Amino acid sequence: MVTHTHNTVTRMNLIRKALGFGAGVLDVAFPPSCVSCGDMVDGTALPHVCDRCFAKIHIVEDPRCLTCGYPFFGAVESHGDCQHCSRLRPRFSRGWSISLFRGSVRDLVYALKYENALWALDDLAKIAEYAEGLVDYLEDAILVPVPLHARKLRERGYNQSELVAREIGKRFNCATSTCLLDRTVDTPSQTQFNRKDRYRNLRNAFSISPKGTIEPLQRYILVDDVFTTGSTLNACASVLRKAGAKRVDVLTIGHG
Ligand SMILES: [Zn+2]
Ligand SMILES: [Zn+2]
Image (cartoon, rainbow, N blue to C red; front, side, top):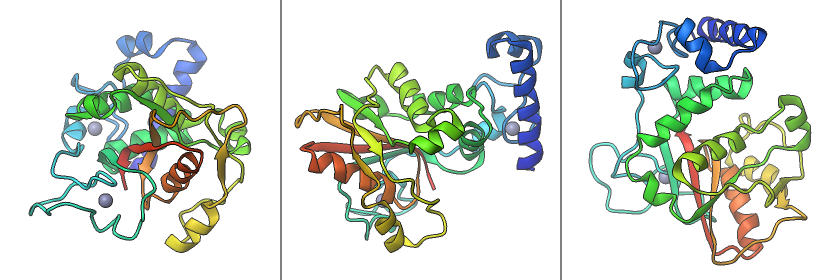
């Protein structure tokens, strides 16, 4: 289903590119199809997700884990970490996941990441706008996207986390800094590794960029598309902390 839908969406995207129209012009002429089910988008909640698929998006609300943002379903746990974070030993103070990484959120992120679907940014930033309290969480922070290695950046043409951070920054009125962190080691994909190996892989993968200056009292929020084990974000937080940052938090679009 996802493949078919993505093909449809990719085709639409190619038509847009070929005709040289901005998304806005073409959306009026041909209403976009839903990134998840391929139906025509029939509502106003999101530009590329139909209302039925939008209704299935789980935007995280309280009570939630303060370290990764995962919701505490059902019984309210007193405080502390959820099962995902109990062994993480986070180097950041707080984490916020806007939604659960499934359904349309996952489809939008994958389209952005693997299919050059820059139009998905508008949907993702709008999903962020539905997250109650996020505006307060982001207040006075500088957003720091998790960097891509130069090789991957060349391959993909852009860093999706940077685009997401910029789009959210624009709407929530906070600055984005892309000159603080570098990814100096081209780490293999993390998916096949266990927690310990992920940590080992990532330990030296990031560094403060030569032009980067850390203001110790400035609050930095690391931004990534998905919180899976938190290892990548933790490695970045560790580098910022070692360079003197005292206030480091985390924001992700989805919790995996
Ligand atoms: Zn749909
Ligand atoms: Zn957690």
